Amino acid sequence: MEVVIRSTPDEVASTVADIVEHYVRGGPTTLGLATGSSPLGTYRELVRRHRHDGLDFSSARAFLLDEYVGLPKDHEQSYSSVIRSEFVDRVNIDPDRVDYLDGQAEDLAREAARYDAAIAAAGGVDVQLLGIGTNGHLGFNEPGSALTSRTRVKTLTEQTRLDNARFFGRVDDVPRHVLTQGLGTIGEAGHLVLVAAGEGKADVVAAAVEGPLTAFCPASVIQLHRHTTVVLDEAAAHHL
Ligand code: GLP
Image (cartoon, rainbow, N blue to C red; front, side):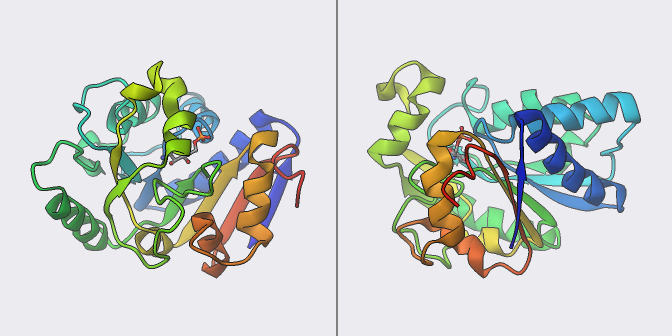
């Protein structure tokens, strides 16, 4: 595992954007996109490189990591809306080659199976962006998630609903259920890039990077992966 510590949020974003750019310039590639606030600077930097340096996403495809259950696709907090407005609609990736989990699917188990099959049919994800929840979740794999889990429905912990209430205004509006790629699914990506910033992530980053491998800290599964890059600002690296 490689841990890169940068001084400012802009440097964090630039380092992660360099990694993504490497794959995009290398030919047709499959990106794994994540939401949450941590990768937003990276998307802004990639959009800037697209507009100013001609970074070309036309032969890329992408899969989103997770989604709330029950939110309409056009709800401003659905992850498909967020990733469209932050990234997909602002670069020249073919929108038909960006796949989302459908949180309104009638049969959620079937939707989850469809997603894993679609990722496999695409030849897998080459580079997967990841944030980390304050409780150690990856995607929405909450503590206790099996380290080999596949894409499926999960119930959010109270902690995660409280953490994400800032996006919804009030905690009661945060959905209780989600669809998320499993830890096993995520681990099949060729390269994992975990990004975290701020003192509030320092404990959980230390647990994920240096603590025991345990389902109680789902992000610790990155320790098993053959190619992981963790990109942190100094505050998030504080307890390493
Ligand atoms: C959310 C998302 C995760 C994200 C995490 C951290 O609930 N499902 O994919 O990594 O929480 O979010 P943030 O980057 O805003 O701290």
